[in-house]
Structure formats: C-alpha cells, structure tokens
Image (tube, rainbow, N blue to C red):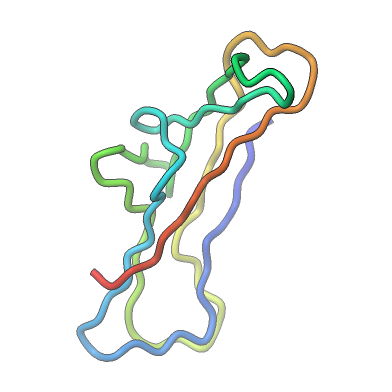
Amino acid sequence: NATEMSVKTINRNLEPGKEVEVTLSSGLSADGEIELQRVGATSDVITSSFKSNNSVVPMANPVIGSFSGYAMEETEVSKIQIGNPQGDKKAGAYQTTLTFTAAFK
C-alpha cells in the first residue's frame, strides 16, 4: 500500500527574510524513486515512488519544502507520498533509510 507522511513545524520563529529549506539529503536512487532492500538479503531490491506535495522529487534538487516567518501552530511543510513497492516482491521485510536535512536557504 502507498504510505503518506507529513513534515511539520510547530512554534517556529525565524528572523524576517530568513527561510529554511528541507531536503531529502540521502535515500533517493533516481528522480522520484527510492530503493527498499530485503532484510537478510540486501541483493533483493524493490523500488517505490517518492513524491512531495504530489510532485516528483528530483535528485539534482531534492527540496521537499521550505518555511519562514512566525507560526505557533503546527504547520505542514510537506506531504510526502511513498508509492506501492514495485519489482519482484519476495517474502519478508524491506527497509531503507531516508535522511532529511533542514538548513537556511
């Protein structure tokens, strides 16, 4: 099944003119794609699509969202969609590591 997750901020308070970009700093294997390795058999790999706010995340510029200003309430920065796994799905668990980075733009 497809999976959705949300990246949010709460109690943010940035100086005027400052902006923070959130990127997927590691984990993409191609534009808009991640690889999942089978636990115990890392040569068995399947892929899933990876989108942010319904757009493919490109490897050249993997920004998934940004934020600025002041907001006390919980505010969504990005809605991430991970598609149904594709490929030769052998029995067992599959995993990957995705690393997100937030830095001033």
